Image 1 (tube, helix red, strand yellow):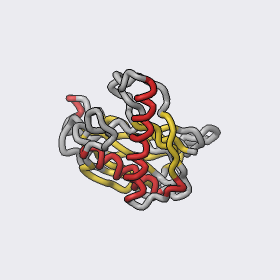
Image 2 (tube, rainbow, N blue to C red; image 1 turned 90 degrees about the vertical axis):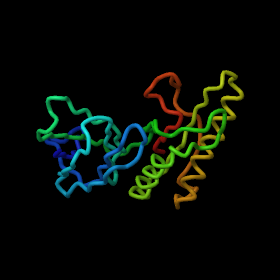
Image 3 (cartoon, one colour; image 1 turned 135 degrees about the vertical axis):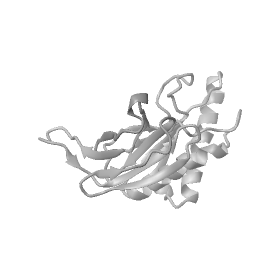
Amino acid sequence: MLGYLQDTSQGRAAPRGIPGLVLLIDNATGQRLQTIRADRTGLYEIALPQPSGLGLRVWARGYALRSEPLRVMPDQVGSELRKDTALAPLAVGMALALPGVRFLENSTRLAPQSEPVLEQLVDYLKLNPSLTVRIGARSPRPDADAARVEARYRALQVQAFLQARGILAARLDSGPAPAGSLDDPHGALITVTAL
């Protein structure tokens, strides 16, 4: 598959290529299958190990992290594919859901399968050293007070994970996650918002 990372900021006459990192992700496990570097023109090439169940996570210095499923139609298997990805410049208030972050049942402890997703967040934060973020969490508990307490401790668990991997505490804040249904398959228990 050939790909192109582009800046499509408002007011730009034509998209501009952006160097960055492209991660091929197994959507079922959250595991990184390949890491590819887009060149200074934004071009990259990636070999797909299978036609389905894949996702892309893309980042570049000064741009918001982009995560999306990779959809390959049956008639496209075996043919050359092209994937253009538009990246938006980082802005205060931008939120990113981390759907792969999970916790042990009825617990504030991170589930082991959350580590690959959080390791990718560590890489992104290291690529953007001036970025300060708010870690927001939600809890499925029906009691509002218990849910608020559990969400707070979940956010602190994510912060502790990031700090243990070298992200300074001064770059991390915690607060409530944006509203949304926990029943939504695309909803996330954890969100990251640029401050």
